[in-house]
Image (cartoon, rainbow, N blue to C red):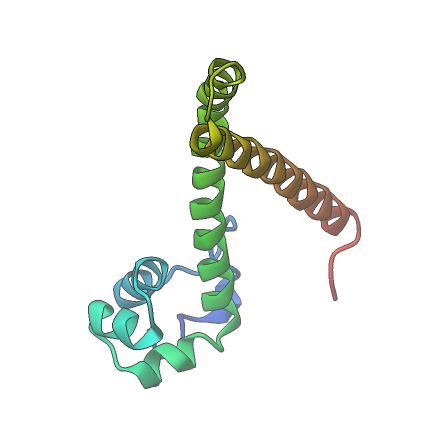
Length: 139
């Protein structure tokens, strides 16, 4: 990290890419805190940095790339959990198709199935965008 709090030498590339720049310990902690805390102030405190430092890092392209990649990993993990639950949701739906008032379980099953399907659509869209960007890199 440089003295002004910027990410390490941007000439080394992007985080997460071969030969990319590495985030400092505090920057990694800040990203982890951003993923778990409710506010930027709470995330900064948890990471042991000032809000001003966090705000500055959130304007640094390499930090933004790393933060977005971390958020994507969290979302993909959540989608995978939803997809694993779809079998139970289908069983709950089938089990409750014949009972008197299955509204709570059916609603839960419906939501799990809807979000799992939406998750597949989002992952598919992300993969398609990534493939397009490989063929036509953004400026």
